Length: 355
Image (cartoon, rainbow, N blue to C red; front, side):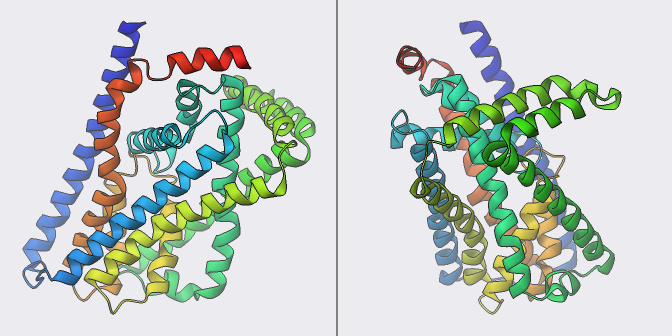
């Protein structure tokens, strides 16, 4: 067992190094490009910039508060605030080393189980958090699109019109997928779990989909189990966990607003906030670990028109990634040894006996 934990820890550490290398390589390339054009020479750091950078860290703490609050609420009374924070930080770490920028949610099952939540309940709770995150995008994206004109969100943003056309196409395709997936989760967990489970089993019996049959069958069974448990909770519980979800995502977006306040105060705060919805939807299909490389490049291109110099976009992009991404690689790497050394074993056994 100790050998397996050591090997697993080693593999995760190696995976943590990959996004760092990708991010540094892309950032170095972007910096070289900006230095060649002389865009960085005109930038002078001011106290307001440092204040904006500090405010960004405060909003990042709000993100962790929201997710810790959510884990604590859904797993109560088994998960204390301290354990909930640890699950949040480890999920952020695995999101940073897996494809897309939000790929760590599947690992929540493992982390919750290590912290003393039975495997069956951990699966139920993870599906619930997944539904809440997807529901956030389904609810708030249309609101943002009603407030911010589409031609400002997608039309004049980039220096390259073809780039913006591609951004808009990918955004709508991914968002449509999010809506469909959310509908399946909602029907499967809340409304008609048995019917959706039967439909998934029949669908994945098709020859073309059989290679994913086992995973689909497991998801169907988990939906039915999750539905049975969630029928026992009340409206106040749902308001709490969705409120925590909104807090975490809004705080994540306001990090960029804080940086713009410090670095480019003349930029529209509403536009900066609205474009974060587009950025995060696009990063959901990023092929690189944690969106590394893609995030930095996308940010500089998509937000470039709000800056007086392209070099400023790169500086804000780097600051954004330090606050919202690289810090979790560091924290996760520090937590990893103690986590696999057995931080949750005793609690796991206790939970099994109580369950």
